[in-house]
Image (cartoon, rainbow, N blue to C red; front, side):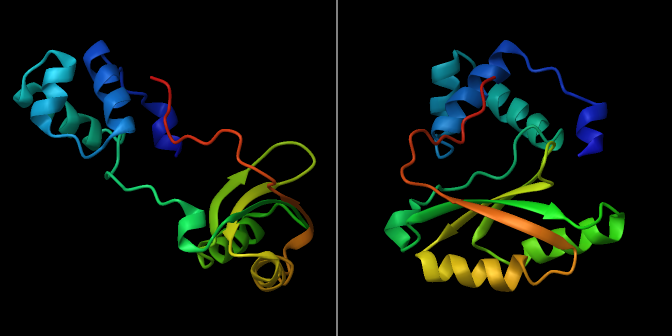
Length: 160
């Protein structure tokens, strides 16, 4: 991540249009991308490869509706650590990597140290994750969980 902060690639207007289109539909053909950006397929392909090499874009993915695969409950868990040393942070982060239902982990400022986004089937599923993946960790002092009542806005698109 530090490397990303040291070198921020300059995004051209064409690349910005490409990114906007690809964030809506990553399966679009290079021909269609070229048509929508008033460019050539070769130019789009070359620019896309350059942005991949620079880390601006990563592999295309298909987004899954959590509710339609039996994971219709979102929760956010705030975690406070006992200590801030490198070993504690590393142990915590390794534990988070082991649980697929924890889909996002953020190191945050303020009263809490981490914010977790957990996607589960139901309350018993969440309880299992909280008790076996979070509260059992020696490095965790306390945690607080909020249940999502309804998604009001959810997007993966980044403004460019």
